[in-house]
Image (cartoon, rainbow, N blue to C red; front, side, top):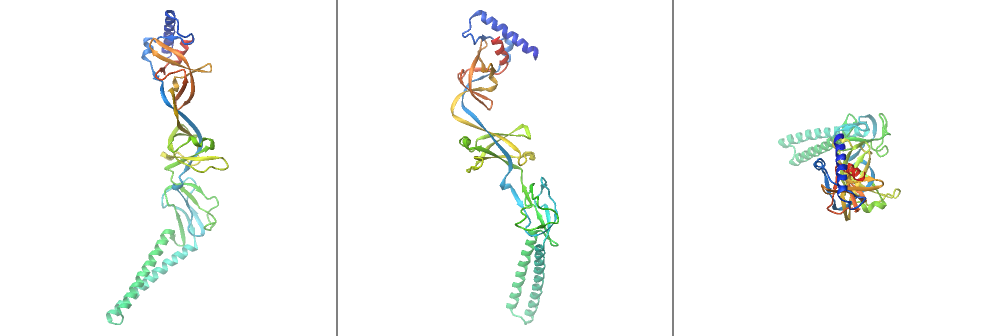
Length: 363
């Protein structure tokens, strides 16, 4: 490879000297050069095109779980915490036990269930008696109907008591706190521990469970930049944790409220969290790409050569007509350089070996 480059430079210099002997260059600072056959085989050029001026805005933000995909979990009864079964960062399945609470409220529910069962047995026995008496002519049809109604009411009471027991996870005066969704424990109340008393409304939620299969990036936009962001604008996201990985998305929600302290507005970007690599509170850098209405000549940024505090390109007009030219760059965004002076739409610039050609032209 090294010998090929040396050969290319020597060939270019010889070609340049040959051209300079035949005719004077049009401009002293822009000599022409002729490509050798070897150089022609490696030729790579791009045309200057008229393009919408692209711009970008860099925002800071962080990874957050969706509010709609997370739930705060706390016992429905007061009591003594017997056991905590989940820790911060754990993955839990829907219905998995998170904590067990010993509660007198649960004992009342159990007593109600037992009482409902007793009432049902009594009502069923009374119905049997009334039916036997009716057959013997010692009871009326009305007596039988009343007994049947009592059985129906007792069954309803027992059914409700059983449903409450299921909801509360009642068993032997113990209440089982279960996860309502599958997800990760993203917050655990630091004030709770085994064998401590719990009072609903005072202690607060035990856990926060979040489904992290999808997450959101919440980024802050300063007041002076609000006009630059709109719904649907594409973004690129980079994270400190994954410096070599770029995530892409688009703005899908813009807040209508400014933070009075920071004078910023928030925007939201939804991301699929494949492999659960995105963790809540991770720092994110969000680059928002947007277009201006005006057009400008653009070329691939790789075509630009920076030398002596100026920007140059190698303009290719033909195998025997190659020149270096200074250009004025308005900005470079997303791999494109936008030119406001020095290059016309349709002209071609070299993308390969342009630095060696530039050196040959200027030596």
